[in-house]
Amino acid sequence: MLKELTGESCLPNYNSDESAESIVADHGSLENAVSYYMGSGPIPATQLKPGDIALLEIMGHESIGILMPTDTVAVVFEYGGLREVRSDFIEGGWAVGR
Image 1 (spheres, helix red, strand yellow):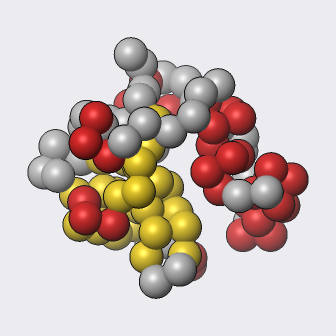
Image 2: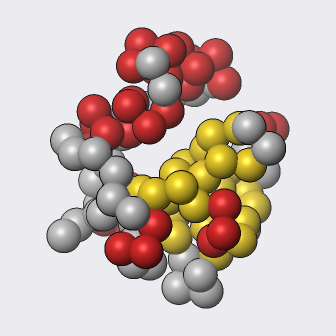
């Protein structure tokens, strides 16, 4: 999604849940991994704008997605399904292109 929005992606490619989990494990957490690849730590949820990467926590599961103009977050969950999630699950995130 990040590449579609900006034309580039600083996040690493992965082709399975196992390879994604390995990337996260190498950094200790999803937040640390994304911060490493984005080159900065997360900002508060209140500072995110549509198109930014949002860090979510849902029932103990961390995920990232893209904040949509509708104040929801587009997230890919297991089994390749795209979902829109309410913004009240956002823990913080990363600004894209600004």
